[in-house]
Image (cartoon, rainbow, N blue to C red; front, top):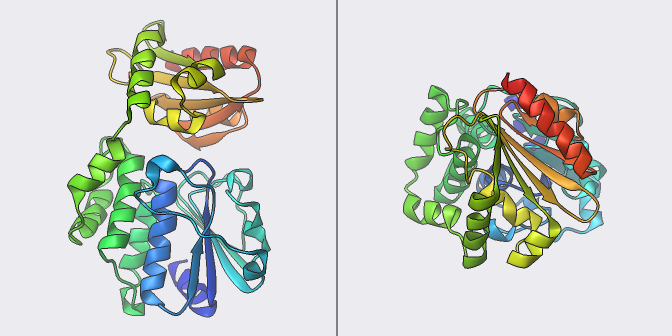
Length: 310
């Protein structure tokens, strides 16, 4: 599979890389990291990254403006996105060839070539493995690509605390650290919060509820977000605010948007991505997302979380 991807990258002069909407560190890390790796190997190729930008992650990089004409003879790669509905920038299917690189369950095997493997902690780790196995083809890491891929691995492993952190994950992270990027600056940028986010975190800690000692629930209405001047996307930074409460097994954030309710699910053991799939979403067994269309539907989700904890 890696050999086939190498051949396609070598074949095309224009390469456009996508990822999922509402990007997290792994989505951006794998997208920008792969772009950096390809550009380093092929300085004369046109390598673009597209999608909406996430202000809290500007320190990782920004997106390109790409016109429709560029897609006609382009190789398109989509990173870290299980299904087409979540791909950011819907022109992803307008290129000459489409590759999917992802570590989520392969619910929708779209594209002309699929490299999907759930054994990796993150799509960023997959890109590191790609480079490891492409050294003979001239691919290398540098401090820029290493920082980006490290960010993705750190994000999806919870700073190497989650059970998806394997010995191979740590070995690949060590390859990145050898590139001597500034880890202190990285962690400072990753975890910094401005005043409004800090105040909202205080609100969350005061208002979350725990059901039967095992299920944590937080509801953020549009009014609350407006009061603190925080967007739905920004609120995702707080999803683990009360994760260390004793006895907690699963927790959920319901964040109201204009016509729907964003659902962020997390777990310390019980499988919750099956619940996400039942409510217009998906993800990892212990970290998933979904969409509800009424507060009554959120009550159904909470009842299902109570059941999986039993």
